[in-house]
Length: 146
Image 1 (tube, rainbow, N blue to C red):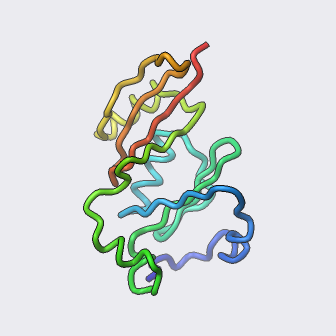
Image 2 (cartoon, helix red, strand yellow):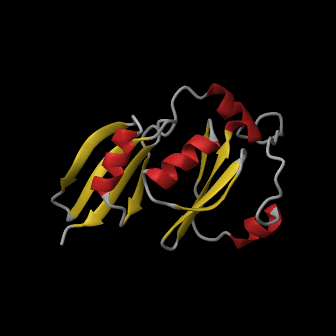
């Protein structure tokens, strides 16, 4: 059930037809809260955000989040899954490349979010930080070590 009364930034079918390759859609409890995390902690470009859906962009990548309520009472096959969620994202790590891990860590700490592993240089050539957002998704912000 939709809550937003705003007109979408583009018709849903037009957006759906624009997608190619791998698409990621995260289900979140509160789109506004997640959008604040995406913008303030990860520095993502917000393409569109309302109470139901947000679309983010970074470099050549684009992905979306939908509020749980958009899947309930709609006949969507995920409706039953959403109703049974006790933990989200188990075993999934979402990486935002060329996102300053030190800045993301500082922003996450100011927001009271969990830092699973502080910013550090790794042997595989990246400096990275592991963060947990308000819905429990694990985000890794990284930059190449020069």
